[in-house]
Length: 481
Image (tube, rainbow, N blue to C red):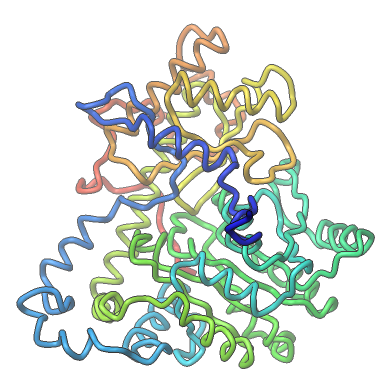
């Protein structure tokens, strides 16, 4: 007798992916500096922990922001009772203003178009329910976040159809690749309802330029399909070129009559480092989608206590400006130190300027250029090197040998140990007697691909690794333009 539904028992959640298997390996043997120093270091989790001290300082200085403190308890009754599932007005207003600040105040967001959700996961699923029926598809450029298979497909029954991007042009999305994917979907008798763009990209750590966004907009207008822009990493841009939101393109006169095809997914999980708060946002230019999504949001609301706290924090303009600037500096410094540590043993990575990770090229460590060899290498890294990095196959990458490695979810000492393990492993695998000299480094193509400013800084000692509380000035300047 079958006791559970087909939806509950199918494998659409994606937990059988190597992406999630890496997390399980970490959970069963987690690294701890004193209790388990030989355990697995978690480098598969895109979490931003570099500015927790700033958040903690604000919370301590603003105890009235929480109804769970003596100072804020007078507001307990007003917040603890049922609220309109549209969300607290002050919450929607503050989120709209924050989204504008992150985008350089170049665009305006209407608080009445904001629909809250339980994280970006819930926002994506809600949009999928609103925009497509089971069996219909969204085009998604590869490589893409493995959680999309769960968030968009598992309970909705829709499909994700890959737009294959390649390393030969740094995995950039072109009009040709979009057209090719659309034609293949039609040949397979699959109805395409939309295109999903992730900007900045997870796992690439790159931003989309205005030309690419305009091409994508032109494409969806011609096909009369929807465009979902996942912009949850928009405030993690730490170097040029700056972030351009699809909202800027929506303001252009040539797009205005097709604006109702545009939908933005946002959250505070990455930009502020609040994944546990489950604050997800849908911003749609389509009235029908806003109304439908708002009805569906009753299944995944953000608690009013969280809304109240977030509204207070994001309304503090001085804090928000300080946080955004300092977060960019710390991400830039962490990225610089980590990628130079990789380059020290000849590991290249895609020249990213955003996100909490880098797209690492380990093709030269593969026994052969196959995904089977990639999985063999990944198991070796998990089991022997004791690092949870995510293989490109789990991101639907079209080429074996790429890995996503996260660098913002740990302290400086843990990162130093992770780099030591990587150095030892690469030296053993390649027969390299010692890390590259400055002269060798300068001659290599890494100088160009990683865009480093001062080659004399690439050899980092433990003392030189900056802490989140240090006053070291980053050579990279954040640009919110």
